[in-house]
Image (cartoon, rainbow, N blue to C red; front, side, top):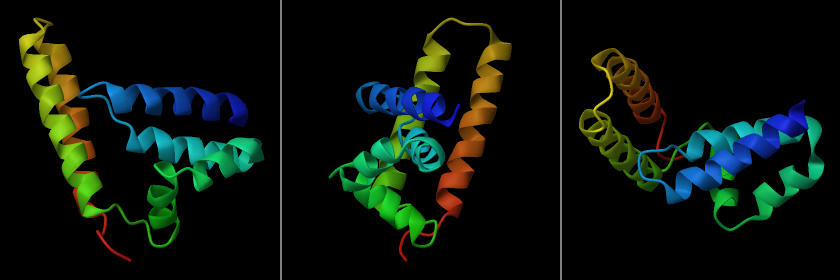
Length: 115
């Protein structure tokens, strides 16, 4: 089960990198957690990768999210808010999206920026 979670979350993280408004960092962290329990190969790949390695090392050494990642994440969330409002979906669905984005925004900015 952990391997399935790792593969799916890695795919969602890659999708998040190329899709504005879709998170990537959270899925990288989920992939790292699940692969640590079920897939040493994916775990090693994530920690030695030049893109995900520094993020995971920061997280491992004090639950740190760098300032650059916070800014990038915030811009992505703001773009997602605009997409929600201009998508034409029902206001109740927009409300759920805004609640989730708000919680994520607060959580990301509540983490330290340096070790």
